Length: 253
Image 1 (spheres, helix red, strand yellow):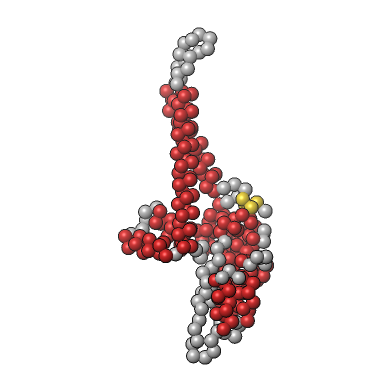
Image 2 (cartoon, rainbow, N blue to C red):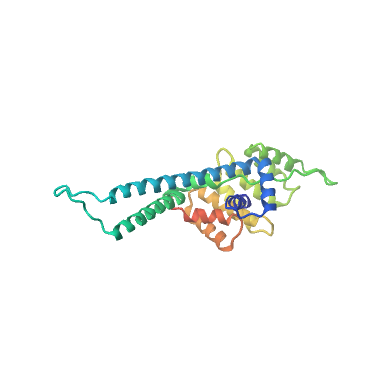
């Protein structure tokens, strides 16, 4: 998710080299999730740009009409507006528009649940394993199938059964994702799973930290979640750009 968003922004900002552009566009054609994220980012940018242009145009037109030398209602003589004022008013108009755009982009007073819904995405499905010469990891493969079908309760049950087949940190991580994703999310259970992953020696600790922060957001524990996001940003670990965006928001409880 972090790499996808980063690549989308680089692509739209024209910061990719020719080979990167080719690779990104090929992936865009075959990855529906990436294309959806790309289209959402593009739509948001177009909306902001359009709103900004219209707001600026309307503001300038309004101020322009106001600075046309009006006639005094009593004397009928043309009122002279100082040159400095004519120059200051358009600048003030631009400041107003840019402040409005800033608040539009950063948002104000968003709830923890709304921010959770915005940033939570199910982590990519784990790999289905084949027979490696010993016993086929039956429960793991069944769990993966349910996971891909978005049947998270069934996936969670099978992940728990695969303890003899798969490293514990993988089971804990994907069990945490299932706990957050099922129809009746259990955020406390998810937090417990992610903490186990973070406290171990494995390659999923950074991802677990990000998802634990989201689970705390989903549970309404804003202060604990923000502490995690600040730590992610400080260390520039997994999803730190998304964590930065969340930190900038004015979250309500």
